[in-house]
Length: 193
Image 1 (cartoon, rainbow, N blue to C red):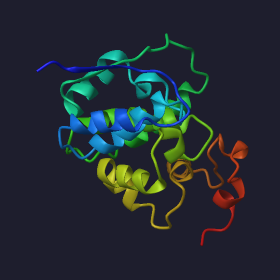
Image 2: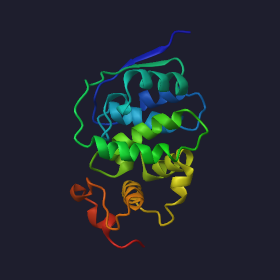
Image 3: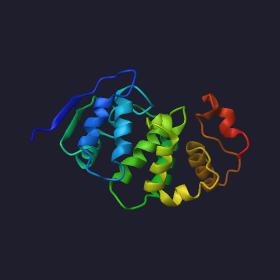
Image 4: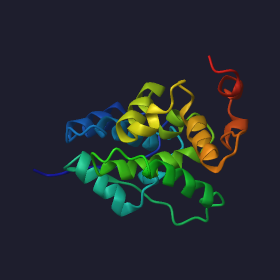
């Protein structure tokens, strides 16, 4: 059987055809649908993830092989760029890696992808290119269950992750660094109800 090859182009809306093709090749693993949504959104110019979901070419290729066997996507990875928030990025990645469920190797990729999205300026589910916040809660519960269980007040996930980092460092007042430019700033930093 010939593997499916799709060239990735930017468009205004997610491609139902690409999503259907990815899901037709899905391996039946828990993160398949989440990765498919992210890939479709990223290729459609939705969300904040770079080509390859922020993974290097080898990792993205391994993700495709594991979750969508026989499916090949041609993506153009950007060259290495200096990251002014590298230390912050490392802290977020360490937090997520410390809380991996340990059930599947794709959790490592998910930690990298979520970390990349945390550096963007919108709600985490939107920056990931997920189709609703429900999918982000599913992602967190499956991949980082102990961490997700700490979010007992259903706090916005990016705010929650940065709050965890602040608590780890003993800082009482804390906010995610990109939140001040978000259109929902008052919803996130208003009283928890």
